[in-house]
Image (tube, rainbow, N blue to C red; front, side, top):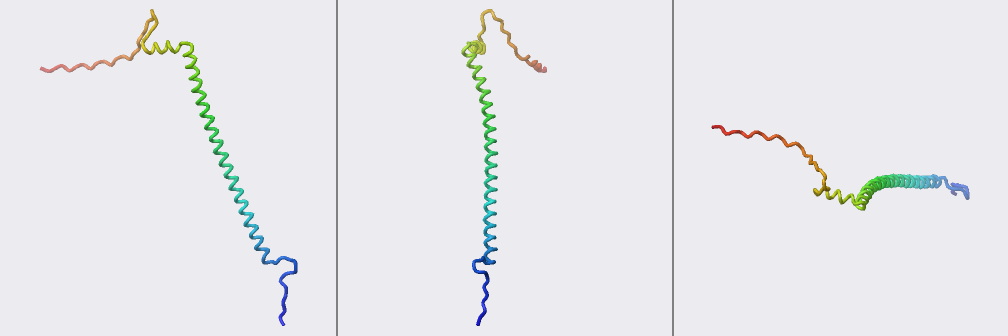
Length: 118
């Protein structure tokens, strides 16, 4: 006759299955933590890139605002008529009885020409 002993108590867990179950749960938990860390790093990188783009756009807006100020001054000059006078002066016109002085650089002295030898 053969004697048999039960490995576990009826209704209890087997010792061999408990270790494997803990290992699987630990692997699943580590996978979840790694996934969360990757998602957090991805969000941080995206936030950094978006803030950099926002900074670049603010800089571009400042440049465009400066250009707009220049254009606004040009429009003001055109509506006041000052631009017409400036354009006429650039083309060589002057007001009656107005003296004009032409400022130029002094010419370089001419080199003496060599005299022919007899």
